[in-house]
Image 1 (cartoon, rainbow, N blue to C red):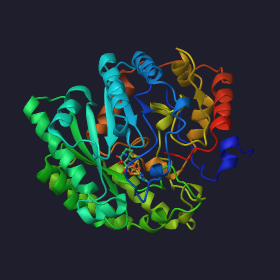
Image 2 (tube, rainbow, N blue to C red; image 1 turned 120 degrees about the horizontal axis):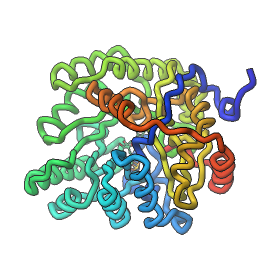
Image 3 (tube, rainbow, N blue to C red; image 1 turned 180 degrees about the vertical axis):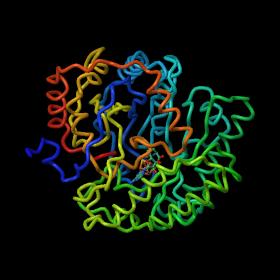
Image 4 (cartoon, protein in one colour; image 1 turned 30 degrees about the horizontal axis):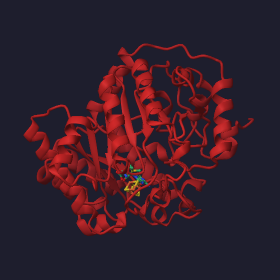
Amino acid sequence: MKLSFTEALSGKFRSRAPSAPLRPPRFMFIEVNKRCNLKCQHCDFWQRNDDDRDNYLSIAGRSALIAEFAELNPNGNVVICGGEPMLDLEDYFSLARSCRANGVRALSVINGTRIRSAAMAERMMLEGPHEISISLNSPYEAQHDETRGVRGAFKKAVNALRLLVDARRRLGINSTRIYVMGLVYGSNYQAIDDFYDLVLNDIGADKLKLNFLQPSFGQAGDEDPFFAAQGAVDPDALVAILKQCNEKYGLGFSPIWMGQVGMYFRSLNAATDRERGWSSTAATQEHICNSYDRNIMVNHYGVARLCFSVKFPGATLREPGDLSRFWLTSEKIRADMRKCNQFCGISHSVRRESSTLLGREKMLDHQASAPILSPSSDMTFAIASGMRALARFGRSPSS
Ligand SMILES: C[S@@+](CC[C@H](N)C(=O)[O-])C[C@H]1O[C@@H](n2cnc3c(N)ncnc32)[C@H](O)[C@@H]1O
Ligand code: SF4
């Protein structure tokens, strides 16, 4: 069998997912910046900067994309990403306001360091995203601060959560969700019960979303020591803990998702070169992603892709209509992605299976109610401009 371009790049392409009818994208990810004020051991964004921001798509351009996305899917969701997106506060709120003005839901994950006052928490409620997730690496202060690389980070994140919960109650706002995005890895998976207790019972947030360690985001070097060390999780013990928490806190977990979490860590344990991070030759035993059926990721420069991986081509969005055109003309990319078993498949942003049965129902509702689109075979736009973008911006590791 002849290997395609992407297959030749990596040995991580095994089983193929069946193709589904093309529907409008459910999520558009849009990046504010790529720098950060923490120094996480599992993410190298803090080693980057925004010195080339003159090349970024303007905020007006990004807002225009939000409007175009809202036309493609009026029930869609826009995820405002970084780096730490709240470091560019006015850009951040500007994108959130565009989402509100266009009637789409805005989601955002932040490290919590920029919400320090009741006034800022109120601004978040009134002008910010509809779904705010603050990241925690642990229910324990010392572990969070150590892995996030900055002392005091835990206190700031928990304080931000409490300010948001208070502001929401004070303002009587029901539409904003306050979540914690909890990272699970080797040294903390046995503390998942304590994590739920802190988030749900002590802080009073709406949900703890579990996020499992992948190779370092924006991996800067050839080696990935945190992923090598902390990818070691006992899959059976982890799934047993998930089941206990499911019972104890009434979480409504999907058994299929729990099975895939176990499979993911079995795959990591079998990898012989985990220390290479994203360059590892290992892969997940099963294909668990469906990013290509639901996501458009637009980076700082206005390059659209169907996932965060730069192993697949994208397209530079230059004029109105390009976003829809990219979505409709990317069947060849989708065909390649259906065979991709990279580690990022476990990410909550791209995985096929929702963690809960309710989330699964929502996904099925979308499939049942969203219109079926006719893909176009005009691939010249997508592939050619994707390759130009890769050449122009060089290797930009998965984020
Ligand atoms: C890249 S950060 C950007 C937003 C913000 N700076 C923050 O930390 O929440 C988004 C999410 O990705 C998670 N993340 C970063 N590196 C990761 C990795 N190697 N594996 C899994 N999740 C990771 C973070 O913990 C965070 O919840
Ligand atoms: S995970 Fe977030 S807080 Fe940590 S370095 Fe990356 S961007 Fe910064």
